[in-house]
Image 1 (tube, rainbow, N blue to C red):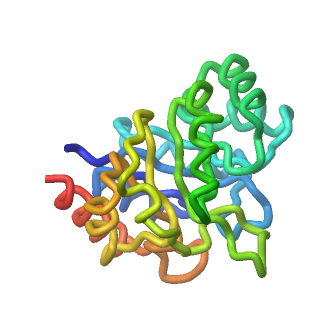
Image 2 (cartoon, one colour):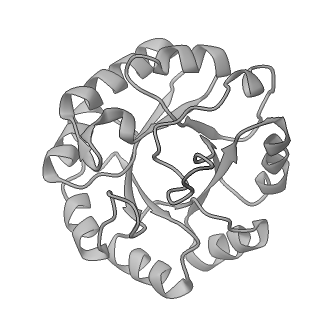
Length: 216
C-alpha cells in the first residue's frame, strides 16, 4: 500500500523545500485569518511556485465565500480545494462544478455518531479528511489543533472512499495510526512544527519516512 502524505499549513520557503525533498503527495496552504498558518493568496502563490511539480497543491478554506474562493483559484491554481468548515453536501457539489477541482471535505470526529457524516459527503467529495473535532473549550480553529480522536472508531469500518487521517499525528505515532485505521493517506500540520505555524524540516522528513515505511 502506498500511503499518501499531506503536509498542511506551509508558510515559508524552508517548509516548501522540505516537503519537496521529502517527496510528499499534497502540500496545503491555509486561507483562514484566525490560523497562525494563514496566508494571503499572493504569498501562497509565491511559495507554491517553489514546490516540486509532482506535489498537488491544496487550498484549505473554512466556510469561504465565492469571492475569496475565486481569488484563491485565480492566484494559487490549486489542484484540490479543502473545505474545513460547515459546508453542506450541496455546497461541496456546487463548488466542485463551479471550479472543476477535486473537493476534499473535512469531517470532525469525536464519537461514533459523527461517522454518519461520511455517508452524507461520500457522493460529492473526491476526498474525505477524517479529523479530530476541536476542543470544546476553544472552537476557534476547526483543525490543526494537535488533537487525535479515538482511532478505534474507524478501525473496524471499511471506508470505500479515498480518505486521509488527520488529528494529532506526529513522526512518533503516524505508523501506529496507519496500522490501526488502515488509512490510505495521512495529513499533518502542528505535528511537524517547532512553533505554531513554523514547520520543522527535520520533523517533516521524519514524518514522511515513518508514514511511507509503515505502508511498506
